[in-house]
Length: 118
Image (cartoon, rainbow, N blue to C red; front, top):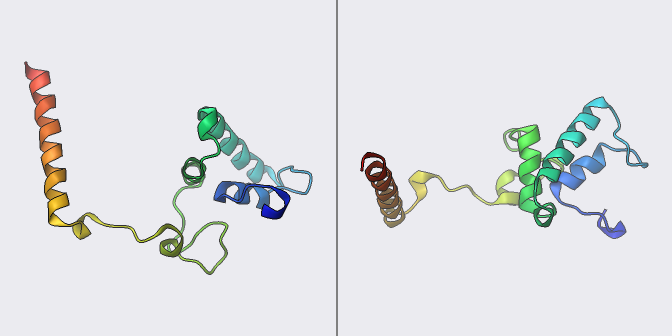
């Protein structure tokens, strides 16, 4: 795809795999998915429509989460952590970050409470 100037983000590859050489969807299911992808893309501001993060989010919004240990359009080899990096859980965050996060949440909630009852 790259050699012929086509984008290689996950959404573009997914669509390419489900269209024929003329660019037409291979079946009704593919047509419905592509329609939904395009609808969500058109809802974005023009300057955001080619951002990989936005296109990836649209793919995930339409198709849902990927299966355990799978990465769409990447074959059976790569794992999600190899492609996207390791996810950090709340338990793995250092204590100073957790304290700052707690403090910000308390401040935000206190301000909302004050605004609501004053």
